[in-house]
Amino acid sequence: MSRKKNLAEIIIKNRLCIRYNPTGMVRLWPYSFIEDFYNTYCESLYQRNSSPNILEINQSNNLNLKLWEFFFKNPQLENIGKKQILTNYHKISIKYDMIILNDKDLIKNQDIGKLVSLLENDGVLIIENIGRNPIEIAKIFFNNFRHYGIEILDYRFKRFLLNNCILLIKKNNDRNIIKKLKEFFLFFKFIVNENIISFALIIFKK
Image 1 (tube, helix red, strand yellow):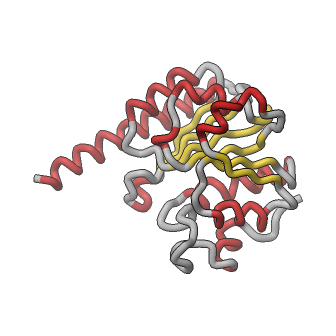
Image 2: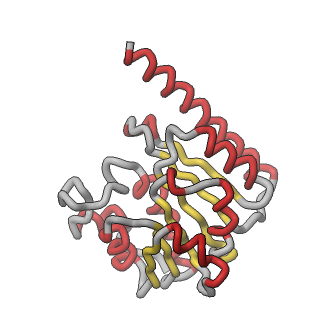
Image 3: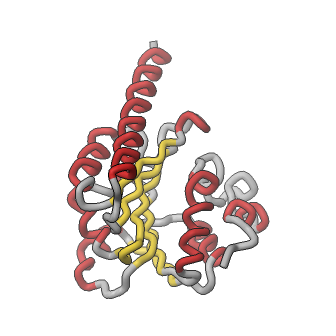
């Protein structure tokens, strides 16, 4: 069953965005996450499961959680600190359809497997704001590429925000050669953009 309204429309109608609300969310504006990723992904998730289990880690803005209430039908929402999750991950019986972390400084490569273990088989781990951290992202990519689907969505040249990127890690590893090549292409695009940005910052500082 398809939704009649997308996430962007819900955010605007309910004044959830920082553009209309000083305490609003930033995923629609100034970042590109809602329009370029969440709209499509959440529509697909809704069709698979209209009442998903969603975990946000260290989410400080409750309007981000409110958005899922507007879009899905009675979703189970949790907002838990990273330390609590990683310490007790082996005791958590629930499996999540979507886990979201919006601070790249809170994630390390060794934590990926623990978080992925909390996903449903078709679930996804979403790490927002990953720009300007190419070494750690490269470690995550190469250490997890064989085990999980992994994509980097880089929107930095759309709105010129240094962190306007998302890292997706999909538990389901059912990928053909075309999908794997696409993942490598997106990774190298990310690295090229990092080098362009680094060079530009050096030039502008002179």
